Length: 89
Image (cartoon, rainbow, N blue to C red):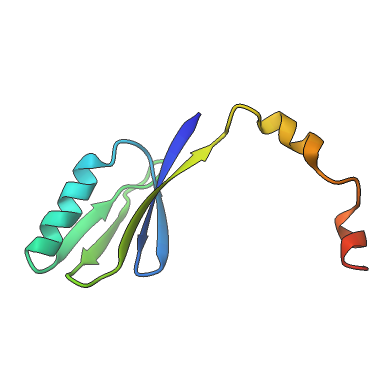
């Protein structure tokens, strides 16, 4: 089981690897200081992206479980109808 953290800032989603505790503290400190840039690391390598956080900006955290234990069994539950048949194409 792999957990991916989703940070939603002003309607945009950023997917982050663990750990995110330090990043949460940096964002909170920037907001408490009246605003500031925080570097959001990429999910897979690269420089990341700097985001300006300010008071009142909508920020939401969520966790997503990707690659669950029964991923292979999910295809067995799929309906037998083709996608094109469902929409009359």
